[in-house]
Image 1 (cartoon, rainbow, N blue to C red):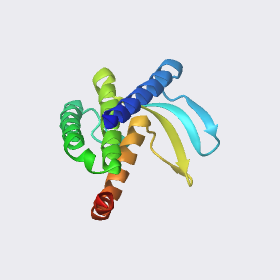
Image 2 (cartoon, rainbow, N blue to C red; image 1 turned 90 degrees about the vertical axis):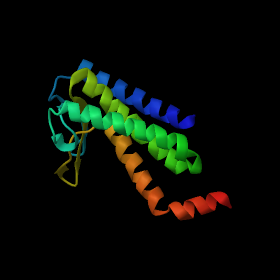
Image 3 (tube, rainbow, N blue to C red; image 1 turned 90 degrees about the horizontal axis):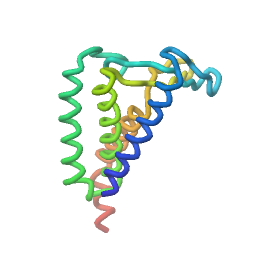
Image 4 (cartoon, rainbow, N blue to C red; image 1 turned 45 degrees about the horizontal axis):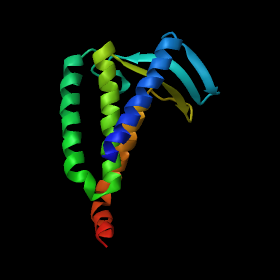
Length: 155
């Protein structure tokens, strides 16, 4: 199914980019890509977004397994309804698994995308985080317009 291929691509890109950072940069090292906007910064996060619940790996393992199972069930049952729904679930699945791999292997998540947005030092993130975020945004859009989108599909 195409949605699992999307998830696998996200996982592969996420793990490859993290491996490049781990193999080639020291923690804390930063490479400027666009001055005052985008940097590649080697960082480790022992928690969730913004470092919350640091060190609570048992919690992350449990929650992630439940989320992955739920996403697979929803992909199997619901993704056929609309492409946007399937893509959003696939992005979330790939992102969840990408960060889960880090938590199992390293007991922390490798982050490296460091941005300054309008002067705000945004928390450092990775490809899996980006996929999760885009997936959630697409899911919210789908949910807001679900009735209209499904009606258009039937016509």
